[in-house]
Length: 98
Image 1 (tube, rainbow, N blue to C red):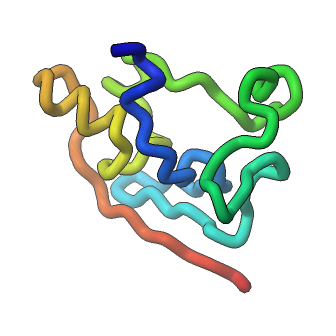
Image 2 (cartoon, rainbow, N blue to C red; image 1 turned 60 degrees about the vertical axis):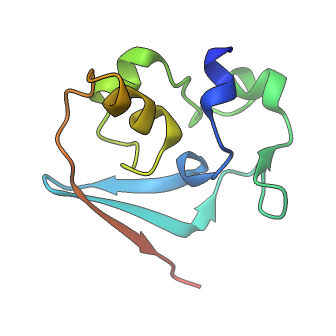
């Protein structure tokens, strides 16, 4: 299995986030310009890092330590399953200013 096959295309990483000490807030009204809300896919996936300054590659290291990935992220779940998630759980809030 390839690393990227772990992703379930929830799209939460494609939205603006605010990170507080114990809360990750994801603003559902602010998706990336290349995010397709119907398919939950990136329209420029193969070129996403060059075309979108907000896009960051999710690596095993990020799955272990990132504060910007929700606990429901498949990469975070993978890291927890393999007992390598080093960041504790936090409250996760979805917001929308629409």
